[in-house]
Length: 225
Image (tube, rainbow, N blue to C red):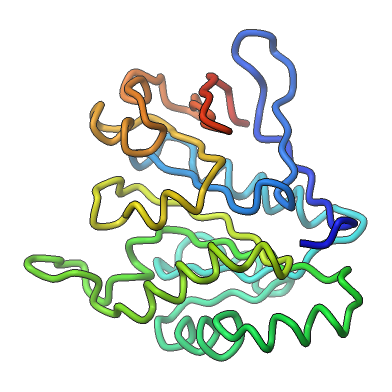
């Protein structure tokens, strides 16, 4: 990870002190947003995209939108990937290839960075909605995402993932271990909360951007915009 890369983001305000809660995505590496639908994840992710867009050294952004309902507005600004076939091409031909990582960094003298935003992890790693008696429908696509999450930060490739599904088939241990910083929005039960932030509590949030930030093993309640 290049020392001069910085991607400062404001996640929201601390519920106790009302102070801004900030992270540097280039230091945290990846960011997970998880919780039930209509609890503030989409609003939060659009806010983060707008912040990244206004940075003086704005990273390249690749937005994965398999639901085809969130990122259409950005097509004239960033790469928006909406189909699974296109996702495969980008994942394997560009992001999954370490030699491309290295060539890109050498070309831009360590000043180049990419932020990947995935809206709904479930739709990207499963070919079909039905998951009865199957693991990931495309194991290689899953492995590509794991490799990007684990190796990407070394090559200035950082990932923000949003998901409304917190079950163990989606948020596997491999995926969760790749996120040292996580935002839990209101969940449907305590089990989902424990999977996301390692403790109960997110099931009692109020919605509308009310969230719990898990960072470096500690939790604090914040209000996302």
